[in-house]
Image 1 (tube, rainbow, N blue to C red):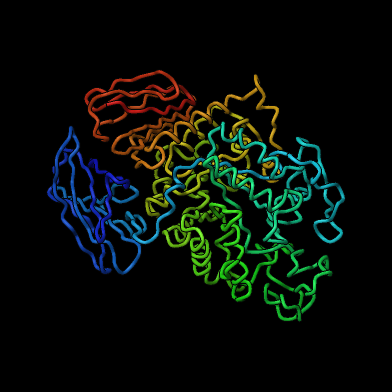
Image 2 (image 1 turned 90 degrees about the vertical axis):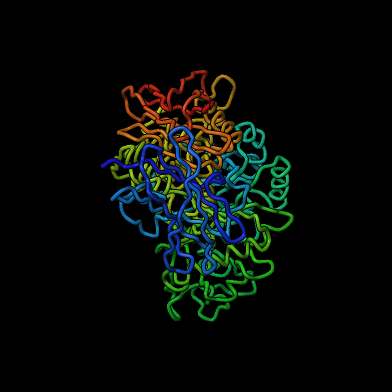
Length: 621
């Protein structure tokens, strides 16, 4: 059974929204005899098949055009293509070509009401764990024994910069190395020279731990990191440099030391008494206690992180609903942040579970957008999150499911739990396509793609310090659909196992002249290329081949075309690229990281890749 060539991209060449309709383009190959193509849609929850008109042909490509109504009853318009060929029929959906009608989740999607901010897809993010990036003001660093994280347990430990962190599950949260906001401020020239355009900071608000996901004060920067005034000055400087900043919001739970909870009675000087061990506390309903007992719900069962009760109007007003609610506060002057990353956003809700979660995520979004309509709303999800990413809740997610998981399975042969998971190139392509097709196109572009983060093993360590494999994965990070984010230190080959080893101090000595690792220049070139290319930032993706451990895909707009070629195997491979599927019959490929060229003849070109080699090539017609 020969499968015909059919393709539909989703950038402005292929999909043009007007006031009440979508103008749609798709292509087939001229050698396939097609009697009709219909666009299937559901303008009033009933199927309509809208006949596409045969257009011009270019080379071996046949163009087809159609127009469908934008749904008036819902924000998402779903559509797919029905192709009639003699006695057979084929369906083209977001996952590819099938002989049967696809389920709704595979249909192409367009949200007419909610789109992510335009600026997001233009960025290269850089994630910083503040305590480990740079110590700019030693005078405010945490001292050993300064306080304890849990009552009289877990005293703080001040460590020398670069000293090894403790083993997993031991003293990780109580070890401090002194990184702070001044240190980040001091390194803005460095970050800008690398090409970074946006910073994502792990939590900076007052909290006892070094990771600060246990907030005690949402309105103040932790004094061991700096001051509100310093933060405002840093954001102003970032904006003068045309850079953005995203802060980490931890609103699902607080620290047991938050004044509302006050388990260890550390806030006795305040006029009100905390909720723990005090059923009459005015803050008792801010949390989720069982009757008058001291039993309460903690995040993920962790007692030191009591969950907030979002059914309480006072909690709602403080976090998002009030005029100066926390979410709004940091978006307003003098801080003017550009984005929120919401920690464990999928767990927000009422009671023991995430009851009415969508309501609160939408409320968070609306609160932020009411102050800054261009605020980027990012959610943390380790697993499939399409329900939150249809446009009306989150603009994007930390794309573990749609990028990090499949990429680590292909390159590192591990899943998110570090269990063995080996896939080939065809399985990688199918996984990436399926994850992507569940979302509207603009939300696909606004997914935050990362190889690793503060919650995962460093990717370099995951691939057993194989620099060649690491560079192939980095090439995917910058060539694939989504907004790239580099975890601090990746550019200088920083290693690390599971938390907290993945949060080692930045080794600044590796940035000195004559020492810079090869990865530094490689990432710098990839960033520069991505920033200069419309296709790599917002072009449609089209797979050209995928077999065993090698594959190739194109990112295209009407004026640009780049192709990413990867050979993850150890032996040399020849990749045969059907350039005619891109509408290109002649021309050349030019490697953007070297001066190598290949000629395109009669719509085809072959490229030989050595073992563990990758290429990014531009197409010159």
